[in-house]
Length: 93
Image 1 (cartoon, helix red, strand yellow):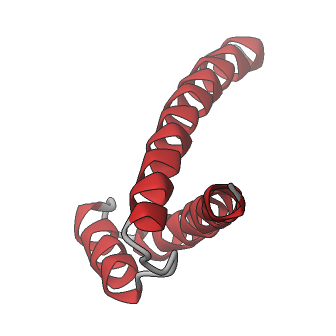
Image 2: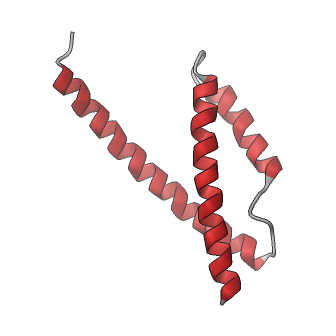
């Protein structure tokens, strides 16, 4: 069995990657918000959200689908909040 400290180090490395990619996703979300603001589009795009959830269900490892959906629900909620903030700033200018 692996040493607990080694396993924790591996989790830390994975967490670092998650942070890196989540930040990248948020940066793209800001660009989406800019686009939506310029086109007078709503932040909430229910069809797109359903599409993402269906994709996640298909791609998630068997038995973990609901966990992945919950994770992406949180990611989408944060992305919508970031977009709403960006749209407000753009509209305020």
